[in-house]
Image (tube, rainbow, N blue to C red; front, side):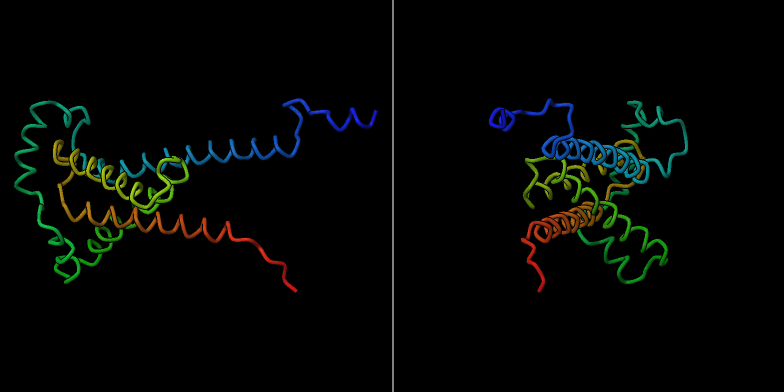
Length: 185
């Protein structure tokens, strides 16, 4: 009788240790996805929709896009570090400096943390930095095509650097978390 009980497997609905771990991981994964989606919506609102002056549908009409691209190319900064130097040397207000440098840098730190947590294929620094760059480029191109902002290569640099910082934070935390714990004497 005892021998037969040792081979007994609990049904899936019972809270065994392995089921609890699986359930906890699923809950954590769902919460991470909810947080990631909320973060992306807030990031999009901050980047694209803070300067909106008309109905959003107007920004995506073919005529508006054509005019925005022409106008946007004249305003666009295609020279690396031009805007960063303006900010660094104090040629703009301090509030604008913090908003531009801090917002572009810190705004993408969470993306560098979320990506390796949610996507197994993005568990390398190169992969994360590439995706952060592409997401940032996507935002910049939408700004160029719609007039919802100004295309700035320095934003790409700062956003990518922010994603790299987030990636470093993530991988550093994983190294610390996975180190074996030693008993203190």
